[in-house]
Image 1 (tube, rainbow, N blue to C red):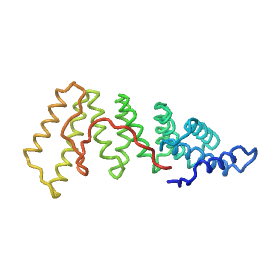
Image 2: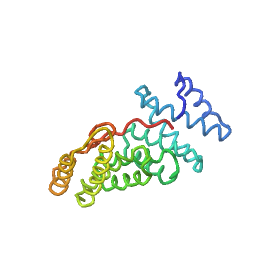
Image 3: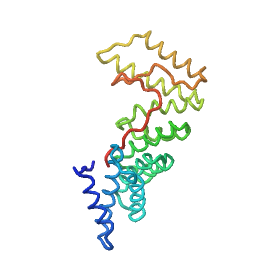
Image 4: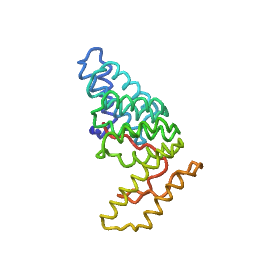
Length: 239
Protein backbone atom coordinates (compact mmCIF):
# COMPACT_ATOMS: atom_id res chain seq x y z
CA UNK A 1 0.00 0.00 0.00
CA UNK A 2 0.99 3.60 -0.45
CA UNK A 3 1.68 5.93 2.45
CA UNK A 4 -0.84 8.68 3.16
CA UNK A 5 0.84 11.99 4.12
CA UNK A 6 -0.31 13.74 7.28
CA UNK A 7 -1.38 16.82 5.33
CA UNK A 8 -3.03 15.55 2.15
CA UNK A 9 -3.85 19.07 0.97
CA UNK A 10 -0.21 20.16 1.01
CA UNK A 11 0.86 16.95 -0.75
CA UNK A 12 -1.76 17.47 -3.46
CA UNK A 13 -0.61 21.04 -4.05
CA UNK A 14 2.91 19.69 -4.56
CA UNK A 15 1.84 17.03 -7.07
CA UNK A 16 -0.51 19.40 -8.88
CA UNK A 17 2.33 21.89 -9.34
CA UNK A 18 4.40 19.16 -10.97
CA UNK A 19 1.53 18.36 -13.33
CA UNK A 20 1.28 22.04 -14.30
CA UNK A 21 4.94 22.24 -15.34
CA UNK A 22 5.37 22.63 -19.11
CA UNK A 23 8.28 20.18 -19.26
CA UNK A 24 8.98 17.44 -16.74
CA UNK A 25 10.57 14.01 -16.81
CA UNK A 26 7.91 11.49 -17.95
CA UNK A 27 8.60 9.17 -15.01
CA UNK A 28 8.30 12.01 -12.52
CA UNK A 29 5.09 13.17 -14.16
CA UNK A 30 3.59 9.68 -14.13
CA UNK A 31 4.35 9.22 -10.43
CA UNK A 32 2.91 12.65 -9.63
CA UNK A 33 -0.25 11.69 -11.51
CA UNK A 34 -0.57 8.44 -9.58
CA UNK A 35 -0.19 10.17 -6.26
CA UNK A 36 -2.44 13.11 -7.12
CA UNK A 37 -5.25 10.77 -8.16
CA UNK A 38 -4.70 8.21 -5.40
CA UNK A 39 -4.79 10.77 -2.59
CA UNK A 40 -8.01 12.25 -3.94
CA UNK A 41 -9.66 8.83 -4.04
CA UNK A 42 -8.52 8.01 -0.51
CA UNK A 43 -9.65 11.38 0.83
CA UNK A 44 -13.07 10.94 -0.77
CA UNK A 45 -13.32 7.33 0.40
CA UNK A 46 -12.73 8.53 3.96
CA UNK A 47 -15.50 11.10 3.63
CA UNK A 48 -13.15 14.09 3.71
CA UNK A 49 -12.98 14.83 0.00
CA UNK A 50 -13.62 18.07 -1.78
CA UNK A 51 -16.53 18.29 -4.26
CA UNK A 52 -14.32 17.84 -7.33
CA UNK A 53 -11.92 15.24 -5.91
CA UNK A 54 -13.49 12.16 -7.47
CA UNK A 55 -13.99 13.60 -10.94
CA UNK A 56 -10.49 15.06 -10.89
CA UNK A 57 -9.06 11.68 -9.85
CA UNK A 58 -10.91 9.98 -12.70
CA UNK A 59 -9.57 12.54 -15.15
CA UNK A 60 -5.99 12.06 -13.93
CA UNK A 61 -6.15 8.25 -13.97
CA UNK A 62 -7.62 8.22 -17.49
CA UNK A 63 -4.89 10.58 -18.65
CA UNK A 64 -2.22 8.47 -16.95
CA UNK A 65 -3.45 5.31 -18.68
CA UNK A 66 -3.51 7.13 -22.02
CA UNK A 67 0.01 8.55 -21.60
CA UNK A 68 1.60 5.38 -20.21
CA UNK A 69 -0.38 2.47 -21.70
CA UNK A 70 2.41 -0.06 -21.18
CA UNK A 71 3.40 0.86 -17.65
CA UNK A 72 3.50 -2.30 -15.50
CA UNK A 73 2.06 -0.29 -12.60
CA UNK A 74 -1.19 0.37 -14.40
CA UNK A 75 -2.86 -2.46 -12.52
CA UNK A 76 -2.96 -0.15 -9.49
CA UNK A 77 -4.25 2.69 -11.64
CA UNK A 78 -7.11 0.56 -12.99
CA UNK A 79 -7.95 -0.71 -9.52
CA UNK A 80 -8.14 2.78 -8.03
CA UNK A 81 -9.89 4.16 -11.12
CA UNK A 82 -12.61 1.57 -10.56
CA UNK A 83 -13.04 2.79 -7.01
CA UNK A 84 -13.21 6.41 -8.19
CA UNK A 85 -15.89 5.51 -10.74
CA UNK A 86 -17.86 3.75 -8.03
CA UNK A 87 -17.62 6.75 -5.72
CA UNK A 88 -18.88 8.84 -8.64
CA UNK A 89 -21.87 6.53 -9.10
CA UNK A 90 -20.71 5.13 -12.44
CA UNK A 91 -20.88 1.41 -11.71
CA UNK A 92 -20.67 0.36 -15.36
CA UNK A 93 -17.34 2.13 -15.77
CA UNK A 94 -16.15 0.73 -12.44
CA UNK A 95 -16.90 -2.82 -13.57
CA UNK A 96 -15.18 -2.24 -16.93
CA UNK A 97 -12.03 -1.02 -15.18
CA UNK A 98 -11.93 -4.08 -12.92
CA UNK A 99 -12.47 -6.37 -15.88
CA UNK A 100 -9.62 -4.65 -17.73
CA UNK A 101 -7.44 -5.23 -14.69
CA UNK A 102 -8.11 -8.97 -14.89
CA UNK A 103 -7.57 -9.09 -18.66
CA UNK A 104 -4.43 -6.94 -18.88
CA UNK A 105 -2.70 -7.93 -15.63
CA UNK A 106 -3.64 -11.55 -14.88
CA UNK A 107 -0.61 -11.97 -12.61
CA UNK A 108 -1.26 -8.87 -10.53
CA UNK A 109 -1.79 -9.31 -6.79
CA UNK A 110 -4.87 -7.12 -7.21
CA UNK A 111 -6.64 -9.42 -9.68
CA UNK A 112 -8.48 -11.64 -7.20
CA UNK A 113 -9.71 -8.65 -5.23
CA UNK A 114 -10.61 -6.73 -8.38
CA UNK A 115 -12.53 -9.57 -10.01
CA UNK A 116 -14.43 -10.18 -6.79
CA UNK A 117 -15.41 -6.51 -6.58
CA UNK A 118 -16.62 -6.64 -10.19
CA UNK A 119 -18.62 -9.78 -9.46
CA UNK A 120 -20.23 -8.20 -6.39
CA UNK A 121 -21.29 -5.13 -8.33
CA UNK A 122 -22.76 -7.26 -11.09
CA UNK A 123 -24.58 -9.43 -8.57
CA UNK A 124 -26.03 -6.44 -6.71
CA UNK A 125 -27.37 -5.06 -9.99
CA UNK A 126 -29.04 -8.35 -10.84
CA UNK A 127 -26.72 -9.21 -13.74
CA UNK A 128 -26.47 -12.78 -12.56
CA UNK A 129 -25.13 -14.26 -15.79
CA UNK A 130 -22.18 -11.85 -15.81
CA UNK A 131 -21.72 -12.27 -12.06
CA UNK A 132 -21.56 -16.03 -12.56
CA UNK A 133 -18.67 -15.61 -14.98
CA UNK A 134 -16.87 -13.12 -12.73
CA UNK A 135 -17.16 -15.32 -9.62
CA UNK A 136 -15.88 -18.27 -11.64
CA UNK A 137 -12.76 -16.27 -12.48
CA UNK A 138 -12.18 -15.56 -8.79
CA UNK A 139 -12.56 -19.26 -7.99
CA UNK A 140 -10.08 -20.07 -10.76
CA UNK A 141 -7.47 -18.05 -8.87
CA UNK A 142 -7.30 -20.92 -6.37
CA UNK A 143 -8.25 -21.64 -2.78
CA UNK A 144 -5.59 -19.30 -1.42
CA UNK A 145 -7.38 -16.35 -2.98
CA UNK A 146 -8.70 -13.99 -0.33
CA UNK A 147 -12.32 -14.26 -1.41
CA UNK A 148 -12.40 -17.88 -2.55
CA UNK A 149 -15.00 -19.14 -0.05
CA UNK A 150 -17.38 -16.24 -0.54
CA UNK A 151 -16.92 -16.26 -4.31
CA UNK A 152 -17.74 -19.96 -4.48
CA UNK A 153 -20.92 -19.49 -2.49
CA UNK A 154 -21.99 -16.44 -4.50
CA UNK A 155 -21.19 -18.34 -7.71
CA UNK A 156 -23.69 -20.98 -6.65
CA UNK A 157 -26.21 -18.33 -5.74
CA UNK A 158 -25.74 -16.56 -9.11
CA UNK A 159 -26.53 -19.86 -10.82
CA UNK A 160 -29.53 -20.33 -8.55
CA UNK A 161 -30.89 -16.87 -9.37
CA UNK A 162 -30.86 -17.83 -13.05
CA UNK A 163 -32.91 -20.95 -12.26
CA UNK A 164 -29.88 -23.13 -13.00
CA UNK A 165 -30.82 -25.35 -10.08
CA UNK A 166 -29.12 -28.51 -11.26
CA UNK A 167 -25.84 -26.60 -11.67
CA UNK A 168 -26.10 -24.71 -8.38
CA UNK A 169 -26.93 -27.70 -6.18
CA UNK A 170 -23.51 -29.43 -6.49
CA UNK A 171 -21.82 -26.13 -5.61
CA UNK A 172 -23.83 -25.77 -2.40
CA UNK A 173 -23.46 -29.43 -1.51
CA UNK A 174 -19.69 -29.20 -2.01
CA UNK A 175 -19.58 -26.27 0.41
CA UNK A 176 -21.69 -28.17 2.92
CA UNK A 177 -19.48 -31.23 2.56
CA UNK A 178 -16.32 -29.24 3.36
CA UNK A 179 -18.10 -27.42 6.16
CA UNK A 180 -19.17 -30.70 7.68
CA UNK A 181 -15.68 -32.19 7.37
CA UNK A 182 -14.05 -29.12 8.90
CA UNK A 183 -16.38 -29.06 11.90
CA UNK A 184 -16.14 -32.82 12.35
CA UNK A 185 -12.34 -32.67 12.63
CA UNK A 186 -12.34 -29.53 14.78
CA UNK A 187 -13.50 -28.93 18.32
CA UNK A 188 -17.16 -28.76 17.31
CA UNK A 189 -19.30 -31.69 16.27
CA UNK A 190 -21.94 -31.92 13.56
CA UNK A 191 -24.51 -34.60 14.03
CA UNK A 192 -25.60 -36.72 11.11
CA UNK A 193 -29.15 -35.49 11.60
CA UNK A 194 -28.04 -31.85 11.37
CA UNK A 195 -26.05 -32.50 8.21
CA UNK A 196 -28.89 -34.39 6.53
CA UNK A 197 -31.38 -31.70 7.52
CA UNK A 198 -29.22 -28.96 6.02
CA UNK A 199 -28.64 -30.96 2.85
CA UNK A 200 -32.36 -31.68 2.43
CA UNK A 201 -33.14 -27.99 2.94
CA UNK A 202 -30.86 -27.05 0.08
CA UNK A 203 -32.29 -29.76 -2.14
CA UNK A 204 -35.82 -28.58 -1.40
CA UNK A 205 -35.08 -24.92 -2.15
CA UNK A 206 -33.13 -25.72 -5.29
CA UNK A 207 -36.00 -27.84 -6.60
CA UNK A 208 -39.00 -25.78 -5.57
CA UNK A 209 -38.15 -22.18 -4.65
CA UNK A 210 -39.12 -19.42 -7.07
CA UNK A 211 -39.30 -16.64 -4.48
CA UNK A 212 -35.86 -15.13 -5.03
CA UNK A 213 -34.88 -15.91 -1.44
CA UNK A 214 -31.38 -17.14 -0.80
CA UNK A 215 -30.75 -20.78 0.16
CA UNK A 216 -30.61 -21.09 3.94
CA UNK A 217 -28.34 -22.98 6.29
CA UNK A 218 -24.92 -21.98 4.99
CA UNK A 219 -22.64 -20.31 7.49
CA UNK A 220 -19.02 -19.24 7.30
CA UNK A 221 -17.13 -21.93 9.15
CA UNK A 222 -14.53 -19.41 10.34
CA UNK A 223 -16.77 -16.61 11.65
CA UNK A 224 -20.16 -18.24 12.09
CA UNK A 225 -21.71 -15.50 9.97
CA UNK A 226 -24.32 -16.25 7.34
CA UNK A 227 -22.75 -16.28 3.87
CA UNK A 228 -25.89 -15.27 2.06
CA UNK A 229 -27.35 -12.03 0.77
CA UNK A 230 -25.92 -9.36 -1.39
CA UNK A 231 -23.27 -7.20 0.19
CA UNK A 232 -21.92 -3.84 -0.74
CA UNK A 233 -18.44 -3.46 -2.12
CA UNK A 234 -16.17 -2.19 0.58
CA UNK A 235 -13.47 0.39 0.46
CA UNK A 236 -10.80 -0.21 -2.11
CA UNK A 237 -7.46 -1.53 -0.96
CA UNK A 238 -4.51 0.79 -1.09
CA UNK A 239 -2.70 0.40 -4.36
